[in-house]
Image (cartoon, rainbow over the protein chains, first blue to last red):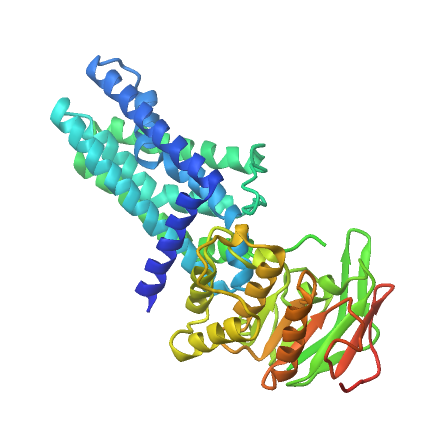
Amino acid sequence: MLFNKVSFMLRQESYLFVRNKVTKIYSIGSFIALILSVFLLFILRKAQIPMSVNQDILALFIVGGHIYIYGVYSFSWENSFKKIALNNADYFLLIIWVKVILNFFISSMILVVVGAVFHYKLGEGVKLLIIAWGYSVSIGIWLTLFLTSFQQRFIDLYDDRFVFIRQPPVHILVIATNFLIYIIICKLCRYYSYETNYILIIYSICFIILIVLFPFIIKRITKNLKVFVDA
Amino acid sequence: MLEIIDLEIKIEGFELRLEKNIIINSFEKVLITGQNGAGKSVFLYSILNMIKSRKGTILINGCPNDGSGWQKYVGAYLDQYFLIPHLRPIEHLKYVGMLKMVNGTLFNDVMKTAIDRLGFDVFQNRFIRELSEGNRKKLGLISSLIGTPQLLLWDEPFSSLDDKSKESLINLIKDLKKHTVLYSEHLSVFECPHDRRLEVLNGIVRDSKRIRC
């Protein structure tokens, strides 16, 4: 039953991306940013330019960049869905998990494709992408959904209006916080010379912290997601 | 079915409170009347806990509306944002069916109601955002019937409907014997089928005398 619900919801999400002007522009924009990031990272690695932080951020943009825009805006454009569900907490859990699963598949797919290109053409740079992927599918998506839920914008899907074009502070905070935590993880990985064992230990610690905070995160997001109508 | 106790709402200078507690019994048809801006919609939204009340309790079938469990008893259509604009009517109905875990015969019954009673083609190949206001309203009313909820909340269900559809809806409300219906309307109280009337006046919701149609 849960599987049916999740697959049904995934189909609804795909309808949104194909049929709505706002989301269509977002998807195309994300894809262009992804291609540019791949190209830039490739050049930096090929020319062996020592810009490690830039390379880390580019890797995150490639594998997880879509989650920021997606996470930041997705809760906003779902006001209709939440109204229909009458603010049901079970439904909120469903939409959260659909987003986490969707992010996992998109990030993994990008990792496989871009990783294969890097491995074939450069013979290196894949570890950088794997670190970014690990961040994106674990801490990145949860942190983004958590922070985003604190400030939702009304998006008029009927008129396809860009009412959210003004960047509210929470949206900037989402990106800044993600970058900060990710760069700390990358610095630690670099400190230990990208040894696989150390990378696994670093991510295991992050994962434990995430599990400990998990009940609080879920509770807070579902509370924040409630629709309150302006009178 | 519905108990509203000590409700008090205050939003940006607008206040709404009850004259006395309201208890709505099962299968009652309740009409909410009042002038534009009187607070009829606010009252309906507060029942769905989509407007924060300053104080008071609302119980739907014994479940407080700020908790969970009450949603399965309720079907609502208060504004067009209860519809998903980029879906086609049948996709929307299936979506609501999925949320309420309704399919098969029960789902088909609702579709039959849609086509027979309100004359709405649920299989039309247009997105909801492309439908006329009247058709959106019909679709919203139909989708609120999915899962045969015990309590139906509608905000001005007759507005934007043509005369024939209004008549069909009046007959539909009369035939909803197994539902409690709470709806607001501007039409004359003599046109709207109701067992009881709530009047919203100067920020106070009062129970008018019972009229049986």
